[in-house]
Image (cartoon, rainbow, N blue to C red; front, top):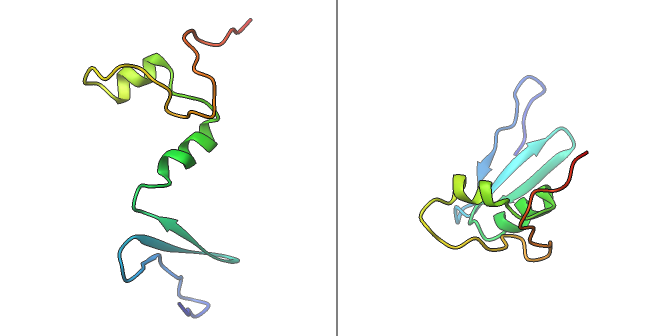
Length: 82
């Protein structure tokens, strides 16, 4: 993906349509758009499970509350704040 100094590189899909190549000032990174790694990435960014309120808001439909990020403890009450 070559560009001139006046033209800006744009994201491009891989031929199989599963990844998006995103150019940056120092190179590029590859995003897996298949969804397999999205849960792991969301857990890494959040550093916790969804709260019961978030579960109800974003996952309505009656599925029982459970850990969304098994590597973190499941809190049944909100964290204490003084």
